[in-house]
Every structure is written in structure tokens, then in C-alpha cells.
Amino acid sequence: MDSAPELLSFAAQVFEKYGGIAERDDNHVMALLPSGLARSLDLPEEVRLGEEAMPLIYGSPVLDRLIQLATEEIPLVFGRIEVPYLKKGGFEQLIRQDIVFTNGQARVTSRAEARASYMVLISRYVALSDERKEGLVEVGTHEGTGAIIEDFETLWPEFRPEFYVPGEVPPHFSVHLEKPISNAMRKARVLAEGKLTDFIKSMRRRLRRDAKNTREYYEALRKEMEASLSHHNLSEAQRDERIAKIKDLPREMARKIEDLQQKYKIQVRLRGCAALRFLVNVVHIMVEIRFRKQTRTIPLIWNPISRRLDPLVCERCYETIRSVHPREENSEIRLLCPSCAQKQ
Ligand SMILES: [Zn+2]
Image (cartoon, rainbow, N blue to C red; front, side, top):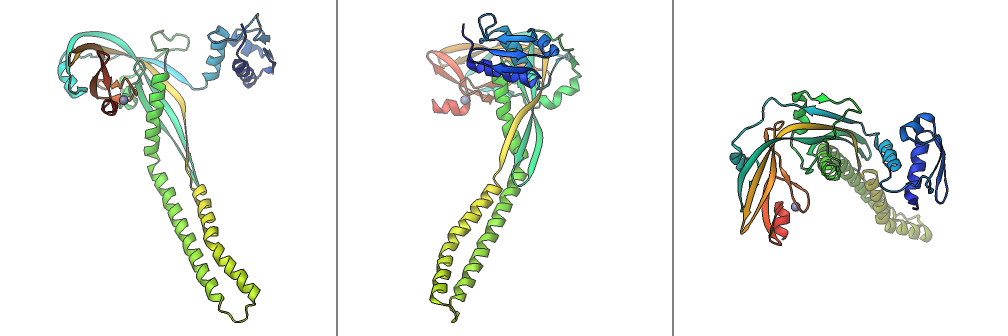
């Protein structure tokens, strides 16, 4: 069982970051760990990781503990939201109101109370240009589907959640967070761009202004230099030199404008910086969808925080949708967003 080289490098980095001394070899890492670090990783203080006695492979408990330690930096808070009321009926109407199945029929077949987990991801954006602008954006998602839940991030405090003490978090939270996190980051980018609209406009305005000034300056310079050609006391050589300089002006101006474009170029960095995860009592309704000759039953969630049905995600591109376009694929119904449905 050979240890993967990238895992050995990763382990060495984690050890060093938390105060250990690590030496990486071809097939192992030798490390001296501070006692606190050794305890939290359940390793001896003097450790030889990666060889047969203690291999470092994907899925191994040592690797899990290292990953947990390395990702602990994003503060994560877990809580539970109890709600006073769960809707009992009238879901048929909500299917037309909150979620629309175009060209398909949908019928509610059952209702059950359940728990669902939601995440509010808080991300920080930093825009760098001639000036700097930063801020936070928050996005709520359903952890199971990755659907973006509008307004969840502003509504949850009204419900006074009970927060779990670390170590006493129940096992009901989703383990697979790729979909909610990638959808939340995608949404966060859109929100950050929205918040940066004025900043982007102002940088563009300055670029236009400075570029205009530069063009005017070179235009004036050209006129002045051309006028000076008629001076009688210029030697032939001086004249030629001046003509060459005039010819070079457009190139010089283009260089100056290129510098301005660099100066006002906007770079935006976005990073998740904290997450809140909640267990919420919800209503699961089962809905039977008919499209052409096919039928399919799917669960929908009535969310007591937003007091609406949660949206779905497109089964091809994972975009959050309230307008669902059923399509037939290999005798099965696929639920798509308008643009994926159109591409088919
Ligand atoms: Zn789609």
C-alpha cells in the first residue's frame, strides 16, 4: 500500500502549519509534533507517516483527521430551528404558485413531517483595482439538493435557533456538501458582482476619463510638434528627428492607454469565510408528475422559514428553478431548467 505523494505533501504542510517540524521523503513524512497537535490527530509526537506501519491513503482515518484540521478554519456553527406551525394542506395550490411544472401535470399524493438541513454560507469578496473594495454576501441553500433558498439568510434569526455545543451535533446533517457549496458560491459571485456594480462603473469612468485626457494630450503634442517643423533655424537632422518622434506618438499613446487599462483592471476574489447549518422541521410532500406517457414521483419540501415550497434544481446544470420543464429521456421524466430544456 503506497501512500499518495500529494497526501504526504499535504500532511507535511498541515504539520508545519500547526507548529510541527516535518521532513518529507519519497515515500514517507517524518515529523515531530507539539503534544496538543499529536493528541488532536491521535498520532504519536514523533511520527513516521506513509510507510507500511502507518500508510497515508485516501479514506484512511488519519487523512480524515488531517482534512478536518485543515478545514476547521472556516468557522462552522450548527443549530436547530423549531417552528410553531407546519402547514397541513392546500399544497396543490402552492404547486401552481411556488413551483410551476410547464407542460406537465402534478398531483400531491402524500404529506409527512420530516427534518431537512440548510446552510447559510457567508463569503467575503475583495475587489482590487486602483482602489480596493470588500464586503460580505450570504446565501442560503438546502443541503440535500443544493437549491438556493431565497431570503433564508435573512429570515432564520426570527426563529431563534438553538445552537449545538461542539461535539454534540446530531448526525442528521448532510455529509455531501459539494452541490450546496458550489451553488452557493455561484450565487455569491452574482451577489458580489451586484454589490460591486458602482465600484466597477466608477473604475470604468475613471479609465475613460484618463484615456480621453491622454488622447487629448498627445493630440495637442502632435500639433505643437508639427507647428515647430516650420521653424527656420532647424537643421536637417533635427527636422528628421522631430518627424520620427511625431510618427512614434500614436504608439507611445497606445502604450500609455494600455498602462491605464492595467491600472484600472478589476480583480475580484471570493472566499467562503463562515457557515451556519440548521436542522429544520419541514413538510415533505410527494408529488406525482405526468408528462406524455410517463409518470414520476418526487418529494417537495414546504419550508416553514420561507413559508413556501423550496425550489428544485435542474437535473442537468443544477441551477435553482421554480419553473420546471419536464422532458422525456430514455422513457423517464427529467426535470430541467428552461435553458437546458430548450437545448434538448
Ligand atoms: Zn439546466
